[in-house]
Length: 172
Length: 121
Image (cartoon, each protein chain N blue to C red):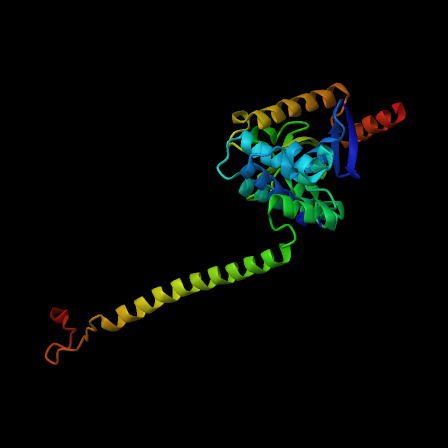
C-alpha cells in the first residue's frame, strides 16, 4: 500500500498491493469502459443496461472535466469533496466523498488538510446508504483501513503527511 | 474520439446481447484475436476503417453512421422542443378562450346609497 500523487499538493491516491493502477486511475479506467459498465449493469439487474452505460459514460466525462479544472487550479479540490457524514466533521483525517449533483460516480477520500485529499477508492452509487451495496460497503472498509494506515504512520496533518511521502520515496 | 469509440463499443455489446454471441464468437467471425475484441468493447481502441467495416458487415449495425445519428438526434430534439412549446401554447390558448367566455361583472354605484351594489353579484 503506497500513496501516489495525482495533482501535486491537492490530490493523492492509494495504490494497493496487487493492483496495476492507483485508485484514481483504476476507477476512471472502469468508469470509461463500456464492457465493464454493461457487465456491472447486468450484475445489478438493471432494466436497460445500455441506457445505464451511456449515463455513466456521460457522468465520467463530467467528472473528468471537473478534475481537469482542479488540476489547473480553476477549481479547488474542496469544491468537489464533502464530509461523508455529519460525524466526520470534527474528526482528524475525516472521511470524504467526491460528489457532483445528479452524478452516480463517487470517489472516496481522506482529508489531510484544506484542499489536500487522498483517494482511497471509488464506486458507482447504487443505494442510498453505503452499507446497502457490496461495492460501497467495501469502500467504507477501505476508508477505515486507510485511516488506520495513516494513523499508524504518524500522519495527523499535512506536514506529517508530506513526511510520510518523502519517507516512502526514499525507500523506493 | 474516445466518445466515438465508446459509442461503437456500446453498439457492438448491444448487438452481441441480441445475437447471444460471446466476444470469442465475434473474434472468430472477424478473424481477429479475442484480445482485439476485448479492446474494441472497452471503448479505448482507435479502430481502423477496415475493422469498422468488418464490424458493420458481420454484426449488421451502422458503425460508420455517427454523423447521421447525431443529425437525426438533433432533429428529434428539435421536434421534442417544438412539441413541448406547442403544448404550452395550447394551454395558453385555452386560458385565453376561457377568459373571453367568462362572465364580466360590472360593479356600479347605487345612485341612492353611493355604495357598491354587492347584491348584483
